[in-house]
Image 1 (spheres, rainbow, N blue to C red):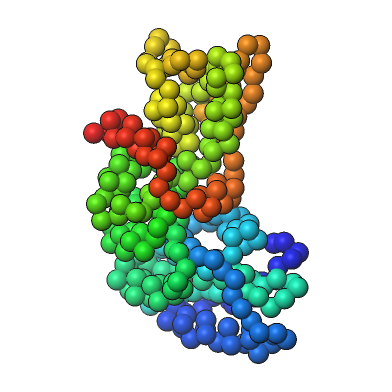
Image 2: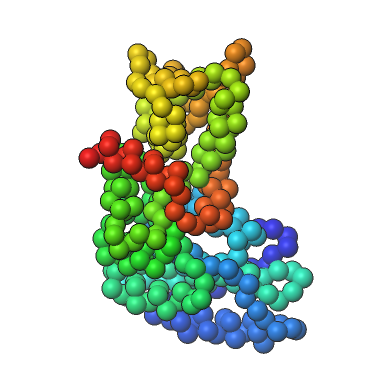
Length: 304
């Protein structure tokens, strides 16, 4: 946590006390403040994950407080947990130099009961602010809970290590006629943003070769990267890889989560950025991307 921020936390309590505890915590913060208390959150962020330890997600949400103040509603799904045993916890994050609340986190641990969850969560969404959804390793992006939450979100970020299961579903989500203004996109698309930028900068200056590791198509970022190249540069599959005008992709024995950019006698290892930086990039551009739309077209051909 940055030294510029203070966090007030409440230990977990029964979920049915959430609205009362939330109101009480805000009232207590106002009473203890020397100046009028204001919120500076700029959006709502709904996060859905499993109820397993998620150190990367913890780090992402903590880092987000400094750069993207938001009301975060984090739902941790525990399928075997009875609704009566569901719990909640609260955090208010303020700046050291004033009483402004720059971030709120409402953490809910419960079973996946979409009707009850929706009726509880939707009133917590601050009206007048955009709402985004991060579906973090929470299973297949479908079902009543996903539909209800994604319907309220302009940007839906999908973080799922099982790329082969997620990839065939993306065209259907993207083409849903009821969500034409919604953006359904893997977080990995933004993780490889600096890789795409480096390739774009090198392309046209020299003929380049990109070396991918084996089974790179099993990893969302590398698979999306290859789809992006194939939909941007005319080319064709060739012996041992793919070749386009001024660019060749081949598979070699190397880390499947990174790519080596080679030109003449030089080379540069290109790696994805962190989940935190990827989320920041996505939140800065929560709209449909024509470039990614072409990638979806490519996925549609791969998974008819």
